[in-house]
Image (cartoon, rainbow, N blue to C red; front, side):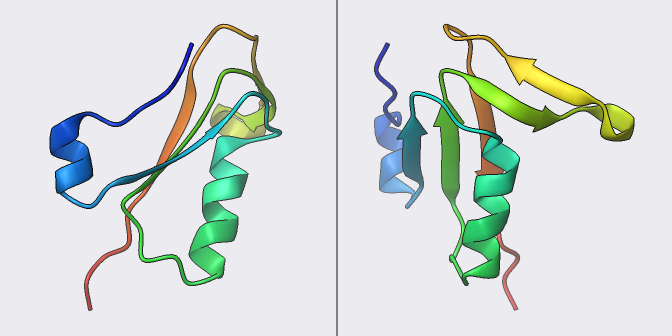
Length: 76
């Protein structure tokens, strides 16, 4: 499975960071935000091993699924 943005998303300035396996897509997006990333970034992975669910529960996504986080940064 290969990840890619739809043409409309790409033309709107969205970017894609694709991984085969990550600890957490949310944690990676947070790292980008803390580093000053301008946003419009999809962080996606086929497998997630250390995600966080509701109320701090562990969340794993087996290979073959889609784990995704969208980083949006407000203007101003």
